Length: 292
Image (tube, rainbow, N blue to C red; front, top):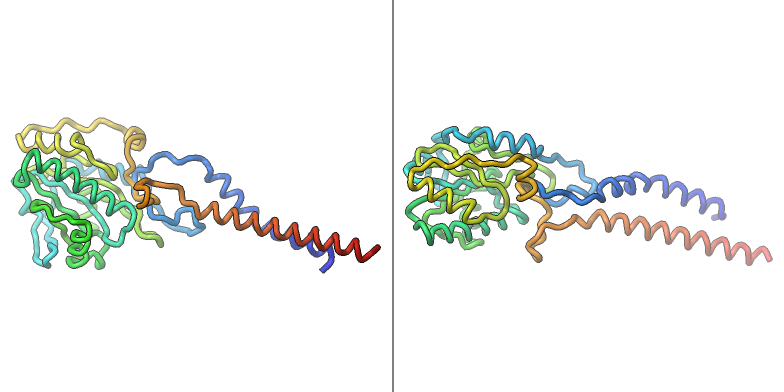
């Protein structure tokens, strides 16, 4: 291999790698807090579908004031449960998928803490909570039973329900819940829907963390039969405060993190380029020595 061949090879490798470097530069700006839950894989070169945050937020808000349909789902024992059964008390509704290893478990644990605190103030018999598995047919009654057992959710007023695939689209639209499948899991809305005792959706609570102001205070108002004041906040204002779409989550630190795989790809490319330069330089030195 001559020096000219080495130079040509290096030029070809540099041209092929130019595109990834441009992509890396364009994605280097820090991201604002996201409104949905996104699985790992967004920066790894995979062509995956993502959820439109504005459209998801719009659909979520559009169902406020509308009644919950009388859907029939299966509980963890496989027994049919009509949603109309929950009328007469305020109801909190969340959507999860049991294979999620990022935000869904964290959101559910945080909801569990908030519900326990609310139960200690209001009592477990004053409101109900249901979590619905939307990844059908995989979120079966048994899968939801295992999920709830794994995270120690055994509150008497909290049930996990599995819908039939035939009603899933209508059910999620009814609650204003949006999701799309990706190779890495699901891009989905992080929301808890608040339903009043008459079965009407009155508020959407977004994010992976919940406070007394988010849940306990509105529940107190609903229990007393008073109207809840409308939520105030644009999409931008909510994005500045909460994350409502599933992102890359680090269970060790308990925080969202950057997907470092892109940086490893860049480091690998730079190492390869350095190695090629080293080989070319050594080849040039050896050739000069042989010519003397």
